[in-house]
Image 1 (cartoon, rainbow, N blue to C red):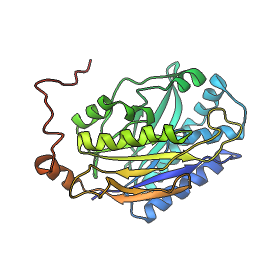
Image 2: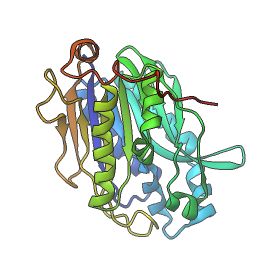
Image 3: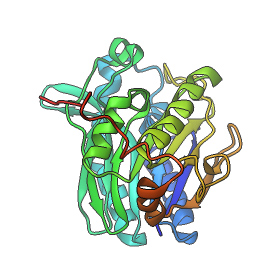
Image 4: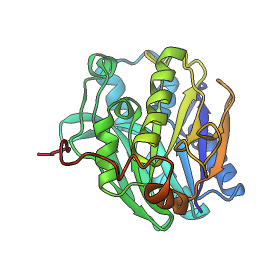
Length: 285
């Protein structure tokens, strides 16, 4: 039975990459101490690095962040191997070819690194940083189930998660970054809806705190959590675990994949198997 740790990460000012690495190391160690199989960091977590050179915007900010990429990858790859835990390392703005993307990296204990590019780019990301959209829904196979990553805004589009579920995903990880309660609730309500629609688990982790000197990350709001379908055999209110609002902490919960399989076949409702694929289906290019 996989155990998930969702990190509600505080974006405080740091003076160096080493400060950032110390914070991330602490949380991976904490997740490992709890016996977690997966640890999920939030979207925009590496934006904290810009506080070491405040005031950067647009292309200059992207160029600076991209310069940290190798150290970022080495840090999380090493932590995943050292603690034998799968790490969803939040997201990191990365230049691929000549375009900038918002990328979630997936670090497995065996050293493998996967990545999911954000597919639905927000107006703010496009205008402030020139972020380009990805084009593929990835699925990752692990010893603890099949998982996918939907970055923040992506979870607000049912088709994206449906594609992941059709590829076999049983758990969807959602690193997010929202500035106020209404923005956060869009992510949360959609995450819980995706659990019901696809009979899957969804874990969501967001950033909190105020990051002065980094445009776009001035204030943040989050209540990270691990969500389930709503039926017998799951948490009463569809919430396996959640953090207090805006406190830097973690939420930890076990998710039973065997229960998912049983509920798809014999639940009170069977949303996955009762899809009317004779009337509608998702067709990809």
